[in-house]
Image 1: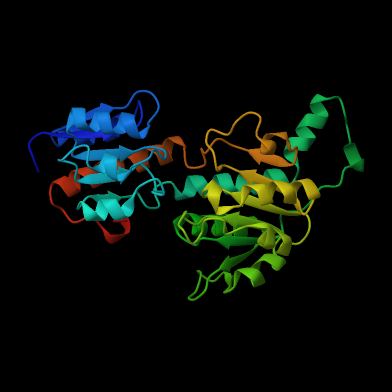
Image 2: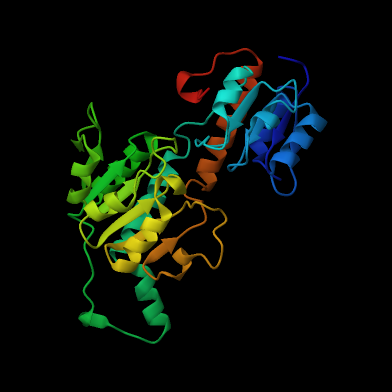
Length: 318
């Protein structure tokens, strides 16, 4: 590794322990202020001559961005999703794309199950009722989470952790698994056979061309009426227009969403007007412990790669 190297973070901040790992290895950390547009990223990379990018959020890492610094050798995602990276261009330029697999799996799983519980027990509605002076008391009849069937699509570290938590709370877990086992959980090989069995559908798959629009009008219609949908994966995995229609018609009883087609979600977005939808700002994996683990793993990926140490296979996407 060069005795001095430069790392560009695509945000205005990064965890101090991660910065120390870079600095102790001889690196200098630079930040991006303002919106991480293609123009801003390309200009800052050219200015710093960075050998590494720390990818925070999902800014556009295009061919133009990847070639803005001739010294660039690695794009290290501070997390797991790399759908905003032109992977083909990265491979063509010999630039490694790395992730921090599993580092925030527990945090995302907790968030997904929290959304399930809040929607199942209708906590947002009950909160609004009490604040408005309404007291349903014994006339209220809630739904049960214990005994519900939770379907998991995407059985990586997050899907596995979500399945374990849901099962521990008494749900029956059913995993979409075309082949192979799922740690003892029941599996279903075909999506169209999985969906009609579910009370809750929880999405944990990465966004790829195959998964984009995976859950559309046809799939939502296959769910039992009144089912719940949880999305802590990526917004475009679900056809947003079809989701809104299913919620308005009552086909879906509710949705817990941490990811969206457009982020930040506009205040006047139709989803924001639906009382049976619980919205969070793409923070499922952002807890103190998870953020520290993700950032330090990301920093170590950079240091190791620049030192010509082979990264573990699970850490390399391209």
